[in-house]
Image (cartoon, rainbow, N blue to C red; front, top):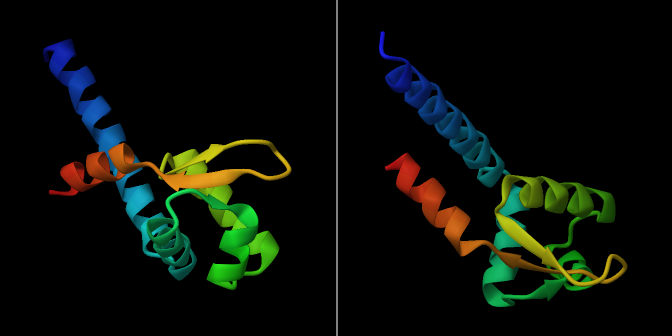
Length: 99
């Protein structure tokens, strides 16, 4: 078997696996709440997200960390007062992979 085709298969499989993980993350109501807020306020501070999503602080923090690791959101600013924004390019890539 051609190794370049084999390597490409595993790379594509990894991409699909990551996309599935991101889709699963997107299915959570907490993730949807955060994304809705970020669509309304493109650069929202953590406190704003806490208020508008009405999520528990620990749950919000955990969800934001997961979303950041998945590349769905960008975190900017200082550690004690970060702001978050949607990563449009990542959402486009996931959308393209799903199609």
